[in-house]
Image (cartoon, helix red, strand yellow):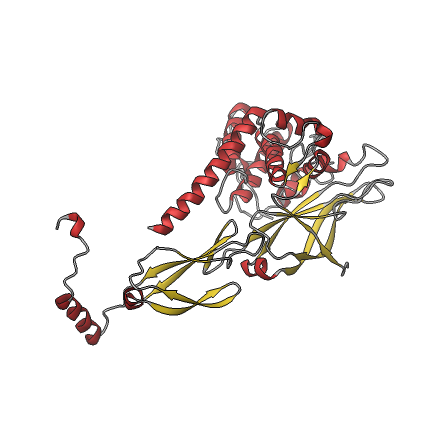
Length: 103
Length: 316
């Protein structure tokens, strides 16, 4: 039994991830992440691929994209659209929630 | 072990064509996909549907399943007949989709264990391959995000033993949950994923934070909401009241003329961080019951003396 205490790092908006970090975390190939970027589903900072920096929420987006492709057979355009719509729904739901609280 | 009616789970007749099964499955998969659905049992339903499709999409497995006969009821206690799969040979990799450990005992008793899942196959590819990253969910209380906490997390991961059999290895990790984590955020524990092959480093472990539903607080991002019941006189006349917050009691001044739903903001009393979230107190004005003669008399007195018409705008 491992009794040692482990401390992790919170992956938030401030966290910067490299292309390599994302590939490892999603068990995906670099090519696949690059395709997501080309589709506009992920938006890294930096011009060259070796210098790309992804924000923390890219991790969640890339993992969701991976699952959507694996489980539902979506193609890249479909994934990009689904991610956008899911985000929109989330924004609308939280606004609805705030609105209902004002009632 | 319970018998599972895979046709019923997918929602098709027993004589459905492979195309019909595929269509029905795709529809359900989109409906219950955990990334898409907000329903509480979405993940369980998605797995169930996936398992049913795994059994029915492959004509060999489907024929074997059909051979069990039509007399079984879903949920009925089930043991496979000793020679039920005689004469069938399962070709291919077995599990083609998800993780072998996701399937039910029923599925495993029919189609067996020990199929190489995608994850373990990847590990054979090189001598020095970095270990896989792992993902797990951890449930915490809202209070834990305020104070930080430690959690013992038990992880199960399929690993190959010396004779190349898949065994589920269990290990427990004590993890510090840092102060200020938010719903849905990930914590990365470097080197706590699968062991690497050869000299390569181990993978990382990602923990996704999920708040347990709380009896009085709601969380939205780093803000926290609290419904706060008031009496009509507190709302009308104003009062200073004790309000519970995850970081302890605070005094809150309710101004005279407070109405239901008009949020009061307690700055930086939400989830800590830079910047810290806010705590919103949402007043709920409650009606004292007219359950005694005294109470009724007070209401009648208000009716007589307070000339109040809440329906003025309606013109009645």
